[in-house]
Image (tube, rainbow, N blue to C red; front, side, top):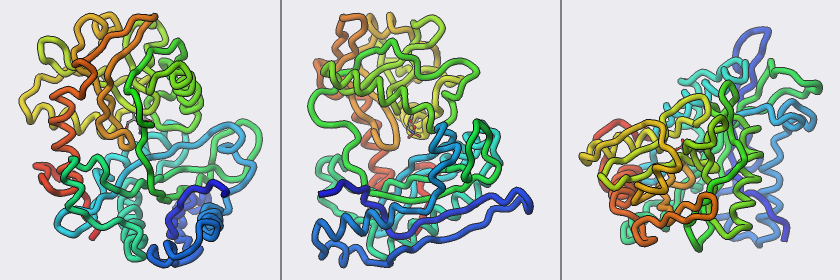
Length: 362
Ligand code: PMP
């Protein structure tokens, strides 16, 4: 069977018109097959439908396809305990997306347009049954096996060749379901000599080209028997930066929760920022500062990585230059578990957030 991304049927696009300086919006609805009807099809038929849905008519030769000149976002929609559907903090993704586009010297996609389109996008797909309904069974394992909708907004350049800057970028919002971000098995991490981001580079924006190094380093870590990779800074190769596509936190032996401070080499994760707020609500002392790998190897007693796809994933150990630092006897630590409960509970609406983090769709 051919492997296809299980794309949702409704897709949003907007293209910047440099003459009028406006964004021209369009909805693509290749088919309006309700989810219940899709599930009655054979696997081969479904595969063909997914293939057609994934054909968005984007230019084959573009700054994006040739040079990785593009940016993207990842955010999630959740069905909530009250029977509704919400998107988690889309205003933050909207801001980061606009920042990424500015970082690429492109016209930024307006933040309010991003949020409005995302809400309408989820609503249209939900009407066709593509948002899995809330299931109280999910509460039993604290939403570890719960479903959600993975929304993937991205920017693609117009058809072009020659190294250059996109002047008529196209923004697409599509969605797919996702399985667990990390494969099962161990949750060991290992430092890499590869460099993800350099000062004055593009590490703090979510541009496509950053992810080639991530894919390579992650593959090497997996081949060596680890789940995840940890980057160190490019200048001293001493300070912890982040994971392959997630931010990283450590609990030190004095109970302080530490995460590397933001700068031009670290992506400002929305989960990262939410975890900092929730941890402070729980009374933990949180520090955003430089943390050296030596400090991790001598003082860290718990570690977890954070991201929209990764959620809050406990890390059992970090290996650096052949030495393994094991955290909490290889079982998920108390701080990560406590915050995960609040984050998931809030996203699925069983422990409502004390902040306005869920943007209601339905
Ligand atoms: N760092 C990188 C490099 C990432 O790709 C991601 C995923 N977007 C993150 C951190 C986590 O960000 P967020 O919590 O917003 O998903």
